[in-house]
Length: 328
Image 1 (cartoon, helix red, strand yellow):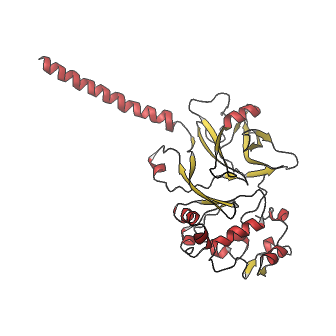
Image 2 (spheres, rainbow, N blue to C red):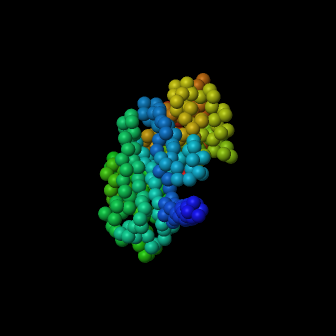
Image 3 (cartoon, helix red, strand yellow):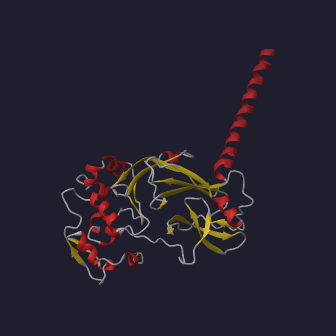
């Protein structure tokens, strides 16, 4: 009889444990995942290589931690959201319980587990040292009556030698918005200088692959069109086996062709020489970049197409860089 009672108690104990465990997982899932309406997982460089005297940087990315099976299956990861300048490159990660522009968001009353972090990498050093900043704290220090909006387009801005990423703020309990600048060196928010007017991207990096005859070489139905970094589509990769990049920078070529890596142009301005040096690597090694190159009228001084055969000819027909930033 005692043995029978022991078995019954053991079974009841196991059943109780099962109930606790099965009930605990949904609670754990809710607390760590489901209750967050906005989630951006943290990424970090998986591998990288500098190009052309550090004028370019190729990075493949990976998730820091996998929060679900879908993320685990997305590697190699195609990440195109980095905001960067000549020296600093930044990513962000967040978990927020309010959706996008929900004006109930209050940085003074955050829920447990909420965060919005910005990771900044220093590309002036070989090992890409990383700093992490708390954006929600930076907003609270700037003006705690605002919250950062997570659904707006974010771009790079440079002013007086400083490098920034734009942040859009909205008034808690209101629909009023304003743009501010996140300083990637200090981690602080600053007002947009009056001289800038609006916080727009003021460099032009897609000159060759949009407004010359190389457009036909790079563009196709599955081309990944990013305004400041370059990612290669499969059809472009298939015609890249004789690129100079493969010969001079085999690691970078491997990352771009097999690991979905992005190419970043490390400049704060429209640097035509830098762009030409890098795009010279992205064509067959026996071909000159300016050999019979057609420059489209959208970017020429007289608004007409021109065929050029040298860098000097190219520069002579091109609009000044101040005007190029207005071409979209």
